[in-house]
Image 1 (cartoon, rainbow, N blue to C red):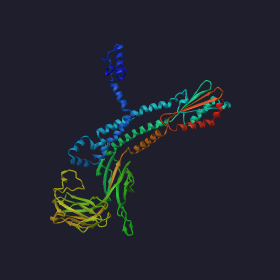
Image 2: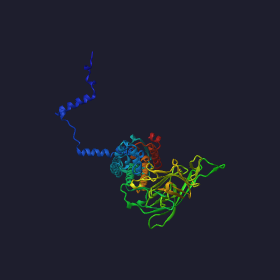
Image 3: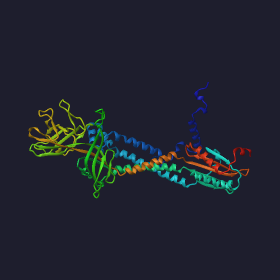
Image 4: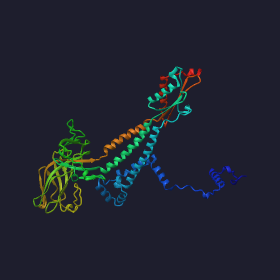
Length: 570
């Protein structure tokens, strides 16, 4: 009876046998196992290994994927560069999570340390891939095609032809020259290798544009990265609300909101001006059988008639600004029409009869019929500051229950429905406030639905006296306003150019094939010229067979080829 201890040595694991063999070899050489140590890599070797890993294409692809993932928080959480007020609100609403996210720069994703590190590493990795790859490809282009294999029949595509003995036209010397010429016509780079007896071979290769396209793609990707970064550093973006007959000059103090790039300087602003002359809205007014269609009243088009002056020396020019049709001024600044609304002109007088506020009030549309939020602040009123908040209705319609709605977006029956307040508006403390919000918590109600005086309803041209002799408010007229967005990014044009070259390079690398061809010419035992040829592709090439057929067709047209059955008889 056998047991486990009686097992034959052959049944031991192979790793044990390898270890035993290694121990025996060390013992024969007089080296103890404990004396065998791996060579130290060293600082230089470690840096070389790290550089090799960083500049590999696999690392570049991983960094590109990581950069895309790192950009995701920028689309989920508000960003300071776009809306600092939204960031402050988020942190206040999330007192635990907000500061943690702020510490990790989640609200400044695209300028954060970790995003910039990924970006720079990707940039270095791509350059590290491109430089040696370009050098190697250049060496291949200036080097002759590879030497002719001894056995062409082992190649994926192979053919042989025996030429008729027709004198000089089919001699090995002439056949060799003809083969080189035909390969050149098929855009091969050829190298003729002649023997002393007139025979020889032709080595040919084409498809170098495939690798050039690959290099162009990666160079273009680096160009995109460079100009995206340059655009982020030198660009600027701002918003401005313009009332009818108001002009805007491209100066820092003229913007309502301004978001500069990292390296932006005020002197980078190119001088230009734009004035809003008039604004037109087009709404759906079609009727079917005398009744409004389901889309009646919906906006169809917005057109702002403006006067622009592109520089101090330029002549003013009248033009149109429309949605999705921006104007280009100031050396590449793009001006977009992004919003519009009504600006009722009101005059507020205080308790002493002095004008505390007079001018248009920007309202904020909240629905398709332009029911708009209106806020009026009069911090100069005396004896108390005055504030008003309510709605502007372009076409007011009484619903019968004491409430009014806007029945149409156009000015049919404009009305102001306001509540009035008195007290400290908080503007003297120097803390920025939202112009569309009136904080009424510490104010005294003057006119509201809950007070005995009721709310204020003003039709065009009407005036309302405030209680307790605190003043009055008058609704004078209605003006139009537009909201424009101004973008300047010096890298946009270059990004487009490099994106197009990257696409062209990618197409070349995907659809072109690297191919090699060899043709040998020799004389057989019957004194006839024997031509053999073979084709080889780098990578998968499903059209290599077609190349074989096309090449053979050219050979048969150029030379008198003996039929296969005649070859067999010989």
